[in-house]
Image (cartoon, rainbow over all chains, first blue to last red; front, side, top):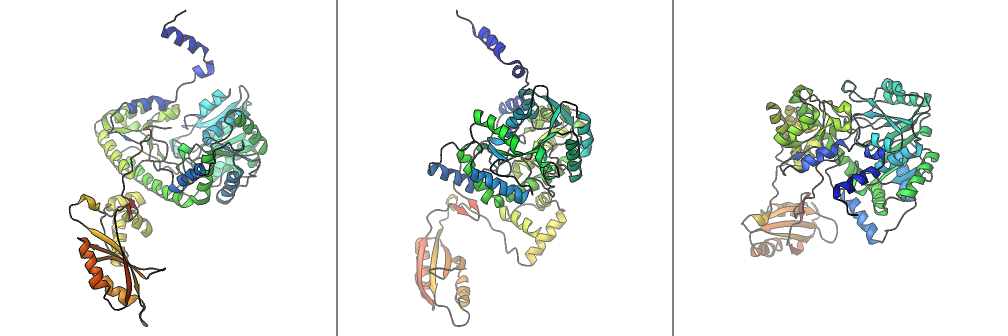
Length: 397
Length: 160
């Protein structure tokens, strides 16, 4: 009856569902392991989260929740007081009104919101269009829900905005939805008002659901154009996804939300109810504090990101790595083709020889080849040192 | 722009013009000009260093002194405040609302020196009604900078 480890391993592997077994690991994962094996002298521009700790008043309110014994479940949709605060915030800052009672659900990060939304709308074989280069989990989420991910490339000559015509060309009779993420991780791109209108028109014409992941929206450095959800005819087909991680530096709280048509929120709520139950009450109460009193700190962090962006974009361009000025988020996406290296080789050699970690563009989709992602959610002094090191490294290639 | 430059100087008074220029997306010359203007207009009065005093050998004794004074019929608190501000022992001085009138920060090399200043100079000035001296025991934060050690929290090196 005894079997050796190898046998038992291969037996179990055979039991893993095929669509999961064949799902590739995130390209970031491999690189993460490489970076982790390096010594401490590496400066990382590979971190996709704020380098600020959560503002103290928000942390303090989380402590207060625990002190008062607020440690229970909440309603599946989340605390009504938080949903009301979200509705107020969106009406005031985004110009779009949602009913907090049935058009809003609090989730465990935007990741969960996206997951349950895709599961709620996807039937086997349904196609969901998304743009690449993009956040690492979009295609995988669609596959795990039984759908077919359809990537549309965005290009440097458009500042990595989605060309509405490219979107139109990707539509088939099976297309169910389009997933947008602007400002975009990893390119920092935003959409112009005109592009939003054209995308909206196409979505209406083909009766598609629009998923708009706007997690970086507060970190928009030029004037922020209204959300696509607020355009005529769009609110009834758009799910607006947002959260607290980036703007309020609350990644570890795992707090996000979705706002949209009541039928969709109800469908999402069912999955949420049977799988996650609710987001942590401590995080929810902290989120309420963030929306009520967190704007000043948020704007301070934003101003700091903007200065870092100015520095990093200028330096990269000066040293010959052509870099579009990102209009949002905290990522620069320089073109490294002038070095003659592939994204992966560039990132690996820069890590080993130059002691700076950046993420190969290919981690965000095939069309990320020729680029690397430099996150400027790092201290100004680290950014200066990293730029000096990259400049020196370029001379050795 | 002035406000932004002042913020950067407030964080680090030794920041280079080049860094100011790069961070705020202006030219180095502009940065230099604006700082020069603000120095000329007296908006920038000087540049100061924040010192961890326990790390340097010299002893420094600091005290906060709350002073009640009798305002004059003409000049109010101004004359006496101006007079007090001339003492080199006084490192800062504020007119405050509440239970007393002037708050002084006084600095000396020994406890005795500060005490002597209070008893022989400050308390004897005409118009000073009473003083309350509070010696500082430990400094936790100064000029917006936290001075006690906080362990650095290490984030993951790569995240999506």
